[in-house]
Length: 373
Image (cartoon, rainbow, N blue to C red; front, top):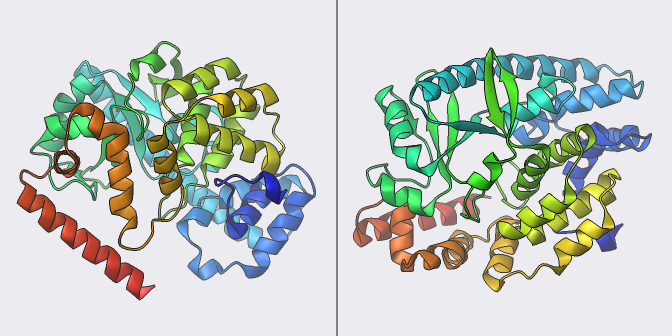
């Protein structure tokens, strides 16, 4: 239904593979056949590679027999093996953080694959997402850096000004000596820095290689999955759709809490659009009252523009700077920072001169990238 499609609706190629992987009727097979006819398997992008295990599982459930399913099954085995390695690393780091008295809450892949998907291999992962208290970030960062981990966040020049970086960011990426990666968060969302301690009150536990680990409750997992839909990435964030379906079908959602938290964390508009996709594309039962309540929540102008800019591929050259400016208006200005101060802290640079040099390099790199396409 084109007239009901929100800006978070997957594009045509993504819609077909998602249909094959997630729909519960004969439409799944028809959707897969249309995608399969044009799929370039030798150059399959990572976005679609990560859906092959789900595609294999759903097609088998619908009685499909085709030689290409052997390829899907091989991908599922490969992702299963990668997940086992990540579970091991996640347990090791959880144990170390426990020894440091740093409370950790797992987000996204690790708890979702173990608790919400029918089989862990159906939810491939490439990193580990952990939320810790903001006050523990310096100690946790020092622990990782002292063991040879490095910050790989492309938008952080260095971690010398960690206190300032913490003030204006929600997290950063670290890579260990064995290639394992951790996204270390102190805020759950990129667009709202309201107190994340709110989520600890309803946190649940799950078993991780012999450890008892904390994670979000199902309703908060759904909120987080919907929020992921609104952030464009070169690896298209369509995996939020199977994540959200897994959460809704496995759990009982507290829709009132979802609305309350959507308002609290300034996410009403993207959550409304995401739930609309889940209803119209997958046929999931989303209460009309929930959609109406989300629609009625007032949204600030800066939040609306930030959402619209973030949910699409950035315009060449000016796209990223424009996004940064509206994110500053949404977050940085309330901290009493000028735009240049906000950007210095965001990128971890110590002077306006370094900010200009780094910004010029990135604008130039963006321009050259758009020219080559």
